[in-house]
Image (tube, rainbow, N blue to C red; front, side, top):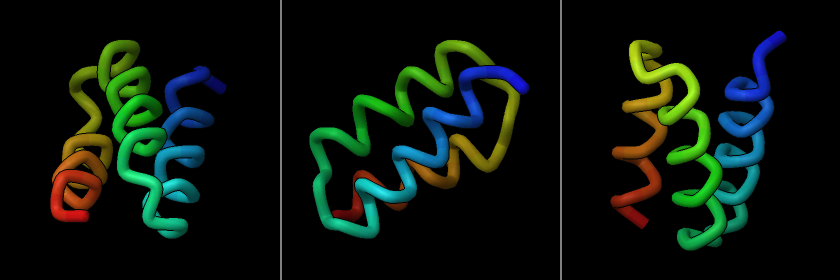
Length: 50
């Protein structure tokens, strides 16, 4: 399993805890590793709405 999915999960957790800075860091790491995954982009949109 790619590390990007772990970063995505960490971003979800940080988003749920309303920690925008950490969530953004993790989702950016995930996108950098696997830029074509659409759920990563959707998660980033959710983080930016915090």
